Image (cartoon, rainbow, N blue to C red; front, side):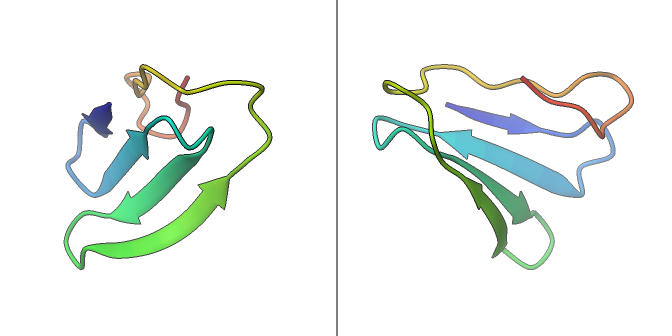
Length: 54
């Protein structure tokens, strides 16, 4: 699963590896990996403020 922040600056990706990764969309650079989910992460979405995601 992939989601862009509304301003297009950040990208969140999620997959079967039980992690969510935050990327700088302009640079294509990984900024942060969020681990600890108990199972595969099948969806990700940014809130309208572009700072919060689920």
